[in-house]
Image (cartoon, helix red, strand yellow):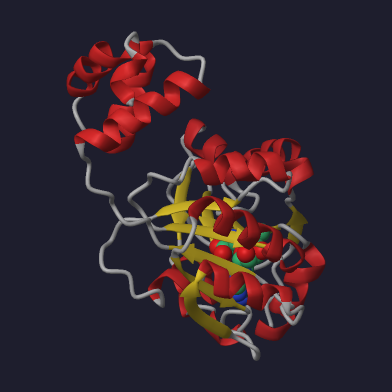
Length: 288
Ligand code: SAM
């Protein structure tokens, strides 16, 4: 064991690694990777290159998505012998759209100390360059790759008041932008491609412009997409009536459920909608 510890169990360190530029590793990350007894890496060949660059010889074990449960149990056993383990993924912060959460959860359940290190993450790097006014945002990672499910996720964002941050691979960026533009319309967005790398590219534009850009085919590399929230429409008596009409004609929902849904979507009181719906539900003429 390389480090002395008073605790009978070892410590699980969560160690972020660069998302492109090797200079982005922190001094603390280098020290921890040197000091621990074992590094659990998403892809040992990938991490080997980083360790070579840093001249670190700590032994490694692989920890990847398909084997998370099995490897997690093995790593917990190692931690229980008092050895310290560092968890890394191929790039960025482990357990953020990457393997890691299983062993972290298990460490908490087994009273093993978990120490997360701050460091590179594509999400925060992109968000810091968005120029958004407030602190709130919604991070959804990768949306489903199947079109129907992806569109369902985007539909759920129509009324969200938060900017949303998404991860996407280069071969699906056009499909994502196509559905996003279709469902969310003319919103502002930030396209952050190849962050920290040679061909880093940030572009802030509306979704349609970015969709056209993505179709140009010169979009190699990795993407973070930040999409601004839609403009809040003023809630008027007419807009509530219009929504009640739409739900009455298109959805098989009870008057009570429709009132609940509209109230949640518009951020207004349920009884206000319910009273209006009660007047109009069985009296379609009132809509004309
Ligand atoms: N755990 C990582 C993190 O903390 O950022 C994310 C890993 S996830 C499997 C990989 C996705 O992150 C990519 O598909 C891309 O959406 C985003 N990503 C990673 N590196 C990036 C970079 N250099 N530039 C832009 N996006 C990046």
